[in-house]
Image (cartoon, rainbow, N blue to C red; front, side, top):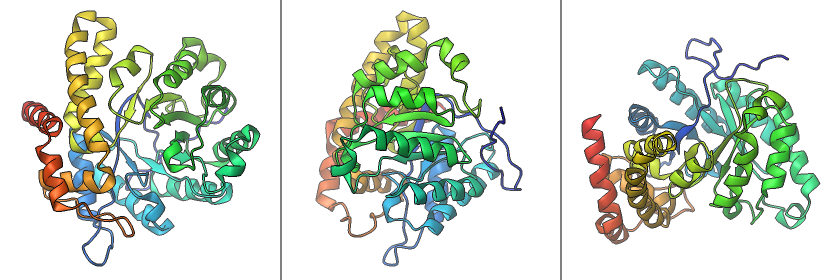
Length: 347
């Protein structure tokens, strides 16, 4: 079997970086005021800030307003991220790029472009514009991910997000079938928030025999089962899940990485579980509060915390100053910020 090497360094050499369990952040795309041109300085600074905290980047996803980006802008972001990571000593940190679009053809095209630009894996959302046709057609949904995975030069992750795909919600049976039949699939992000679904999928793919019976096309890209929120990292770990891709990691990278480490440690040492549960409570409350603020609210919080953030691209509206003040003063936010500052100060 031929191994597909994913990713490229800033000198053009192809290397394979591990797509491993842990915490990933869907990176916001930052823009220049008025012109809405890409603000690459803020973008790369933010990626390096997260990398220092142990968080890996996902570029041009939902939080990154992938729908609002041109092909060339997505490529520019991937290239800028790879160059910044390599320059700052994070050459081993993988990049996942959002490549899902309306058609199978364009999605494959974007996967190929992302690979050339330096992405190590792609994440593909279900095409939702014609959800009325696709939602009840399991064969068509399966064919979509199967073809994209077969034709993509880099491993592909399934992105199950009913809220952004016309309500299409892939079930655990379909995802498990895809995992066993498509060796270039490297995982699933469950932004459906369904812990039962995570448990059912992980019960198959986390078995030791799975990697032997269904080896991946790229051995550095195993099939991971990742939550799309931060509020079930501990339950997910107990069910043999592999972490999360979560917007909250933009705001509190050290906290999320610490939580995943505690959740993993508790599997081997149950005495660590109370500490993990206590931190999970803080994170879950903050995730519930901050997630409701959406992209604009997250970017506004980053502006408050780190001095960059700005507004989303139109037609998404900016976050109102009074709403930001309310969000900032909320006890769930303040509790998280306190923990994050303590952990960052110890790092």
